[in-house]
Length: 335
Ligand code: SD4
Image (cartoon, rainbow, N blue to C red; front, side):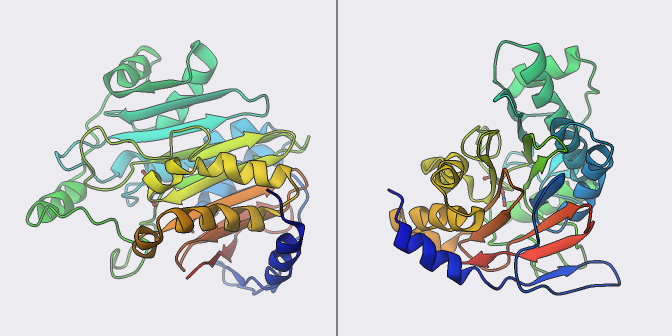
């Protein structure tokens, strides 16, 4: 239940968040940026370029749904990105299987999971939403639907991904890294990040969200994480706001994480406090597991106030609005 005393305490603790820009004119701020809309936010530093693409739609007064789809297509197409889309790492059997979902201001949603051979799962998810009576298509059925809709069928396993997979096969140990963007895991490659979750408020104040990933590298064939599951990896409610997640999806699904964050905001929590509470639930339920894994939540409310919170340090999110195009904010964490 909503605990007002705790809420005030937590709010006071949110006072300092550092942020920096990737541009030459980097700046640091000591509080969360002013809000308002239009605005787009997204997970990890590859969110900066994704947001810029989304902004092209938002600044013209376009719809948040179009903005988030266009935005997340950027990392989906990035051949240096091994955790989202086209060049994602495969599962343990060498199949690249992609997950994505999208949700609009009317509560419409669409999703694809464990889909192979199609580079832009987010656009397929949108068509599932718009052209079928269903919400989720998986595996061969998702690929078949995408091909029927005119998507190109292509083998997604890149030479780099194949090399990494063959290297992994030597030990075949499934051990998700805490933050895959750590330099030691991604030498010299600043675009090697995790799932992208994006939330946008358009000029009318309507909200939409998108989430897309290749999931955990070297997972069991057929494994689906939180990212394509409405309520887990993404949830938006046009009365309240939206939330999305990144990290070990199993723990997010267990707690219906993004739905939980939105419901906490409905009760009055600031987005960052709502994210913190969702993280706390994960830690409380599985304290030993939580020490070893990363989960981060990102949220925005209808005023355009935003915030994030993660289990481990290292989570960051990108913000783009009329004042700032390339802001990156370091999320706070439990540890
Ligand atoms: C999943 N949540 O498949 C995704 C992966 C991810 O940081 O976000 N990794 O569980």
